[in-house]
Length: 177
Image (tube, rainbow, N blue to C red; front, top):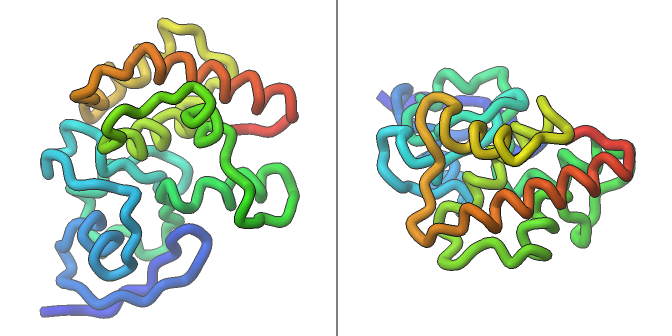
């Protein structure tokens, strides 16, 4: 039976109607029209659906929407506001999170399908470790549960470069990830 849920997504209160066990990914994409998180495997094994929940990376394809009530969900679309809040500035349409800008500057994506999940993982990593080594970046993308982030195009070297670039920018501006 469908139920109404009050969610906080990208800083905005949202009301959605869904079956209680519906994966958060479906609600984000279908009800809220947020296309950043993507369906990859449906088993939390690839990372294309990654979002931040209360600041931690979560695979939205396996998390039921009813477990998100009272939590803060952030998709790639919400990263600029996260950064603006951390910096204490007013968000605007021109602001990008340093991770997003680094992805552009490093020309990281090829097809781009997995990249929103990769950026979410980078934001999560940089929130815990503001200056990660290459080994720590590799570890965060390959050994952090539930499973590795997968990129069929093989942009892993560019991802490492982008994470390092974002870390430098974030450390030079005095803001956390």
